[in-house]
Image 1 (cartoon, one colour):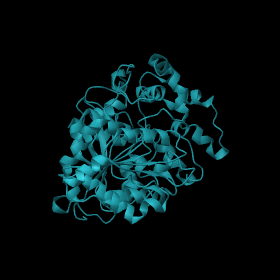
Image 2 (cartoon, helix red, strand yellow):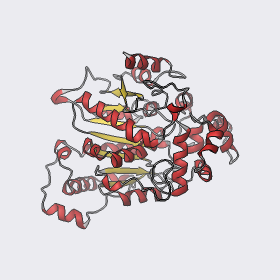
Image 3 (cartoon, helix red, strand yellow):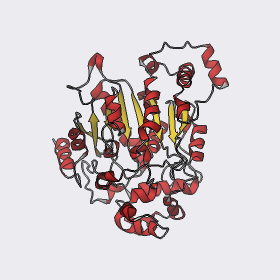
Image 4 (cartoon, helix red, strand yellow):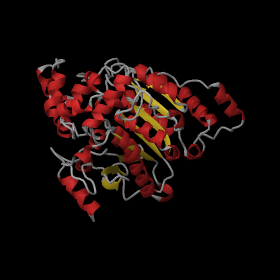
Length: 432
């Protein structure tokens, strides 16, 4: 009863305009909201699009659609996956392509501001960073999705912080590697040593959490006041139309691409972002910039990094040269650490930036079409067998399709010596 009541409250209190489920229903898609309780008592709202516009009834049984789970980035929410509308937003494109689409909401954002005992007025509610989101929120959400759908595993697509928390989960709770069939990383943010975002100006203060808490608020990160004043002194040189964007922290932190951003979207974007997070979460990113390491919050020089050798989920990364947060050098560092790589895809547009992976005018052509191509190569047999031979087989299929060359993407890496050993003892699957 408590969970159901809080779910209704959260939807009714969703600020500014239509809530995410209303946006989905407005466009003629089936929409569901689910509330999940984490181990430490947070109540998270998941949003679901179980099918395309012609979908009738819940998916399930032998005809169940493959499941895709989408996780948003910093200061974002599930709304970001649907704001550009049908045919343009990734959530709708996936639903129309035959997938059962689920979207997470991290603790502290618009749709996940509830706890079984704590109020948002309690400092304890905001005592979390992206470590807790990866360790508690994602596992709770994934367990719920798999239970509801009856599936054994799902596809995971994360943007920005959605990739950070993905690797926290897989390295600290390695049993979840078996529950994720493949991961797609959009603008991955794991290593930040080469980050060019204005958030880097917080790095010198990253070890002084008390100072940042005094500056930005000890609990919820409040970007409409102190944070924007802090960043403003480093300049926000935008034209008159774009001045409104300077008042929105997500654009200040992530950058703005005037050629890819549709001005008609501005009211919708400003009504849903920033969606909220804790000051501790932002500080954790500042610590990553300062150290260049992937470590828990407040880690010392002796604290070990998250152990990425435990990650066995095959992943594909999409990155762009003009991304202020996800620098290509940091993406390369990540891929040197993980073993099961499906490949790196470089967006063939020099101006493409961090938020264009969500709202760019040409995001479908430059990114989403290739995301669909990656997912389409995984059939039922692959779900049960993720040997190197299987992965090399799918690399070959994608290379032969030519898709990764059409838009100038980096081709999948060739087999390693370890791959060759695995191939000698494994059989290739049939094309699903």
